[in-house]
Length: 548
Image (cartoon, rainbow, N blue to C red):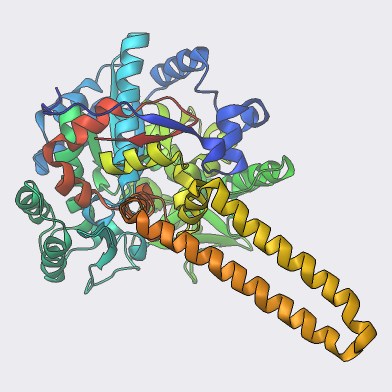
C-alpha cells in the first residue's frame, strides 16, 4: 500500500521520442519493432509475447526456495519494509514471475532515472498481475559487483538558484580496483553530507531528507549497502525487492553458468560479437565490443580481474592459470567468480523467473546482442521494456512553456537564443518591418553607389564595400538593441526562461540523467514516490513532462 500524498500529481504531457532523443535502435524498437525482432525475445507491445514469456519463466526449472532465502536474508539485514519481504516470499510460488530492473550503486541514489526504472518496473508488475492473473513481483538488481568507482562516487544537486553542483566522496581504499560492494565509506562521507545540506534549498523536508541520507550513508558502511538501504526506503513500500547482486550466497545458483563458460572459453563472447556485427549490418550499432580474448567472467580472488583465454591458456589478468583448477574452482567456489556485462543478464534470469527487464537505452542496445547467449546457457530470455523517461517541472516552468509554446528540447542549449527568437517574433510587425526596410534601403543605395564610383575612381570601390559592411553592422546592432529592450520589458519572462532551462537541463544535460534522488527527496518529501508512481505512465514512445 502506498503512503498517502496530500496533493495529486498533474496529468503528464507526452513528447514523442522521435522529437526528443534516442538512437535509431531504441526508436525502431518502440515504433517499428519488426526489423529488430530477431535480436530480442518478443515485442512488449504484443499481448501474446507476454503470455509466452510468462509460460517460459514458469516452466524453467530453478531453485526458488534457495533464492527466496537469499533475498529474505538480505532484506532482514537491511531491515527492509514489510511489503518488500512479503514480495520476496511470494517468489516461492511456482507460478510467480518477476519484472526486473537494475542500476549501479550511485551516490545518494544516483540520478532520477534510477527511480524511474524502479517505478516503471513496479507499475508494470502490477499491470501484469492484474491482466494475466499471475503473481508478479518487482526486483531491483543492485549492481554491486561493478568496479567503476568514478561512475558512482559523485552526485549532482541544484541549489536555491537552480545552479548545478557536483558532490564527490573520496578517500576510499580500493576504489576503481574492487567491486563497489566491497568499497566502504570513510569519514569523508560526513563532509559530503554536510556540503549537501548546505547546498539543498531549505524546505519543510530538508531535515528529514538529510536524516535519512545520514542513516543510509555512514562511515564504515558499504557503498552498495547504502544504496540498497536508500532504495528500500523509497521503493520498499511498493513491494520492490532490492537485491545485492554481489551476495556470495547467490553464486552457487549460477555455478553451472560459470562452469559452462570455462568449458567453452570465448564462446559466449563470440556469440555476442556475432550479434553485434549483425546489428551493424542491419544499420544499427553494437553497444558492447568484447575483447578478443574475453571469456565474460571475472575472478574475484583479488579484486575483480577479467579472466582471459588465448592460445589455449587461461589468464587471470596477465597471470596464467591452470584450466582444470579454474574449472574446479567454479564448481566448488562460485563466489570467487563474477559475470561481466555479457553474462550478468543471463545469471540474473537464471536466479529469477524474469518475464521482462526494464532497460535504459544502453542496456536495450547490449541486450540485443544476447539472444543467442541466453540460448547457449539454456535460460529463457525475457522481454525488454524501455524504462519511462521524464522531466519533473514545477508549475512555473509548466506555465512558461504553455505561454510561449516553446518545445522542452529547445531549452537544452545553454544560452538565450531560443528566447531571443521568441521575443523577436513578438515584436510589433511595424517595427520589424521598419528595421527590414532600413536594411534593404541601405543595401539598395549602396549598390547604386558601388555601380557609379568605379567610373570616377576605381580605388574607392573598396571604401564603398567597407562602408556597406559598417552600415549593415550598425543596423544589426540596432536590431539587437531592440531585442534587448524587449527583453528588459519582459524581464519576468526572461527569469522564467532561465528557471525552466536550469530545471529541465542542468548544465545542458537532461534532468533525469543529472540530478540525484536526494534533491527530489528534499523537494517533495514522502510524497515523491507515491506521486511519481501515480502519474508516471508505462506507455512507451514518449518523454513525459511531470508536475508533482
